Picture 1: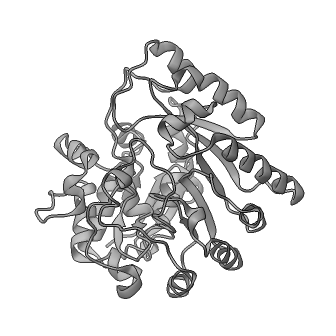
Picture 2: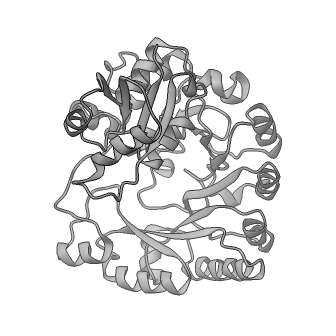
Picture 3: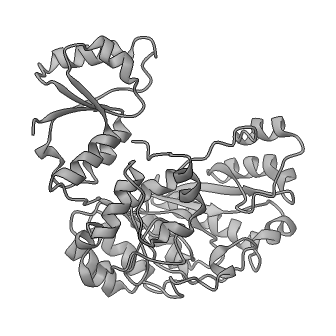
Amino acid sequence: MNKKVLIGDYDSIYKLITSFENIFDYVKYLVIIDTTIDENDYTLNYESYLNKFYLETDELIISTNYDYDVLKQKLPQVNRIIYARDWILEMLKETKIIHKPKFIRLELSTVCQLNCRECYMRKGNYGVVGKGYLKFEQFKQFIEENPFIQEIEVSNSGEVFLNPDLEKILKYSYEKNIYITMENGVNFNFVTESNLEALVKYHVKGITFSIDGVTQETYGYYRRNGNLNTVLNNIRKLNEYKRKYNSYYPKLKWQFIIMNENDHEIEKAKELATSLNMDIFYKVDWSGKYIPKDKEKIKRITGINFDDTKMTNDICKQMIFCPQINWDGRLLGCCVVYRDDWKVNVFSEGLINALNSKLYRKMIYTLLGDEPVNEITPCIDCETYMNCNSKGMKIII
């Protein structure tokens, strides 16, 4: 098979080359294009890059962001242009390319002290993922067996700060040059002083805080059993440690889920976030019940367009680029799976074996555009997957 040229923006290329072990057996050159280039001129850059690197090839792989027809017109000498999504599917089915992502999601704790109003975990009695936390020795062994891992997202269905081994895990990750993120979300109601210092001392890359109001009445409506003042004071203390260590990390993000009960506080939340050196982003609640009275105002403040209801399958990308693993080692695939798993355990069977197991790999084929999997899988109960699949939507790379 001829070696190819892979063209795309930095993020698309980076995800591909960090998710498959032997991709350079099939790719000769990477051409990274700045996506800020003017739309009318960017195709000229392909020719200049090709000339610059003297690329002699009749095959190009391109990110889905780029226009196939325009490229073909600009580069008539190229016999075959294929989208990265289709190429990866082709490679997975026809070669021995190995799914080996350097970014993973590993749940540290499904235990949580809150009882959030729309929490599927608490409503579903923890599903099949169970109630528990990852022990340090298991984490250490997992890293020793998979030294290629570069970054781990550790938050998901529970509260990571209820894991008694958290500081050991952060320290060990730091010593192994592994980035830790908590960007799926934390409630931050129970955090010790040593926890706070460890977050800064061991360079946790980023944390997302789930805060849905600026008064206790509003915040407590959704985050039942939570105390807003406690959360805000913990964030202030964390900022003090960042100043003490003169550290940029962790990067702080405020997640605000918009509901009928709290949309009157979205502007105040943005002001408060700024005062706490946090970025803020807004989401719509899972129930789908929220319809703003003033769509234009909400759009102006939050950036959310309620007239645009396009379905996306971005979460499904996790199965390829950052697969989710339960605290007990069971492979879940993505962060919303809690009713079932993929019947493989990465702790006992190995991460690479689990990710390249027959059924899991067949599901990735489906996400990339192949025939739907006929067997029962965790995706069968997933509303996002079923809706996207019925519309013929494929993963965008």
